[in-house]
Amino acid sequence: MVKTIANTDVGAGALLPLTSTTSLSSQFSFRTQRNPSAPVTTDLRNLSYVIQLTQKIGLFTLTALHSDERAQDFVAPTDLDKSAWRSNLRFQSGPFSSQLRLGLITERDLIAHTILVSFLESSFTGQLRFSMATLALSLERLREQLNAKIKMSMAFGVLSTSLENALTYSTLTGTLSYTFTLSAGIQFSLPVPLTPTKGRIEGVIFADQNGNGLRDPDELNLENVILRIAGERVRTDSLGQFRSPPLEPGSIEIQLENLPPGYTISQDFASSISLKAGEIQYVQIPVVQTGFIRGSVFEDANTNGARDAGERPMKNISISLSGPVHITAQSDASGQFSVTLPPGHYLAMLEQESLPKHYKPVGKASAEIDVEVGKIAVLTFGVAEVTEIRYAPSADFTLTPETIHTKDAVTFDGSLSIDSDGQIVLYEWDFDGDGSVDETGEKVTHVFTSAGSYSVRLRVTDNDDNQNDVTKIVIVKGD
Image 1 (spheres, helix red, strand yellow):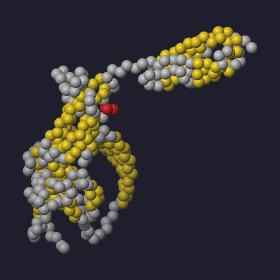
Image 2 (spheres, rainbow, N blue to C red):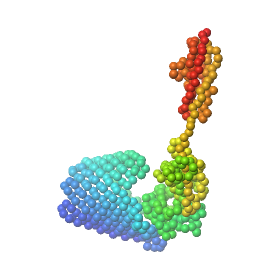
Image 3 (cartoon, one colour):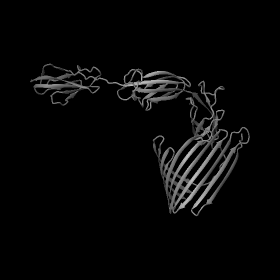
Image 4 (cartoon, rainbow, N blue to C red):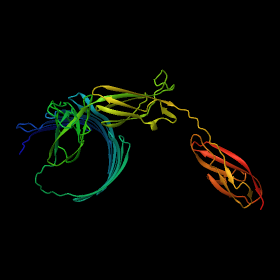
């Protein structure tokens, strides 16, 4: 099938010198794309303009610029506007030049009358030119990242090469990355046949009432939902249908930005799609109605199971929810947490490892709860600080033989020692009363080389680091 697209392009520009050092320039462009035959699958309008004021002051050039671009898709339909206010200060002296740039960029949805994005950007670039080489340094702050680059470029006729080192810090994820790029090129021309280079994604968003992941005839389509497809925003029409602009082939990510309250995307939908050049893929995106779980975690100081006046909230406590989906919520500074979930039966568990030290749940640490469409289920967990009494172990030992002579191998057995609330983890023996440890172990052997009276001490340590000891007098006779 051959598809005919009618294009209309109109552009104009003007440069008005105000003084010998001041000028005002403007540019305007208007473009349309539409297939004239039914059905209409392409109907685009693009309007843009740029107004720029330039002032030269010695070696400096100051520029103030305002630009605006409006993109309308009457099939999708979308109506997006991107405006920018920028100022540039440029310095030029011989082979050296530099530029400082500041800008405010705002993107709006003119159908929903909302601001989608508004951010500040800034950059500094310094450049030094040689006869066949250029050295450039740039520092740049964008919407979600900071960049620092050093680049060396060289050209030899039709041959060119460049070496670039770049550091990028993502303010969104807090990660730092380094990139090293070495490239070489040759300039030539080669006629090639016209082939499709891009693809397109089309589809529908619908309320999957029976949860089967398929669009059934009686299921509602959702209109005015904004999707981000490979970074491009599109909107569903009154039939819940959407269509992307032409996209580069590869792995395409689809995100939904403004689902109506009470809806969430189905777990059955794969948000990553592989797109080939010249391909038009049709996708069905199921969304399901949701319910809500709202809850709180508090310090139940009197352990009565109810929140009384003066009992403080507990923040940063994790609650895991398992059911049709698995999710973990966390209490905020007011002890509150809330989640939106597909309907179904869930098990909510207070994750005790997230509690402060010595805190335990009051009552049950888990609860079963049913989430219904459009309804709010409520959970409350109380925790309290527990003071635990840890008892010291009891130390005792026996020895054999009972009558001891010098050079006899005497066995000391500490197995009579006990710990009522745990276990003994360390046995330490002192055979000569000097306070230092001579042997360790529950059962040890020792030889006395001289006759006399010895103070033998056993010190035991339990798993709570509590200690106790016992000392007995041992008489050693000569041979």
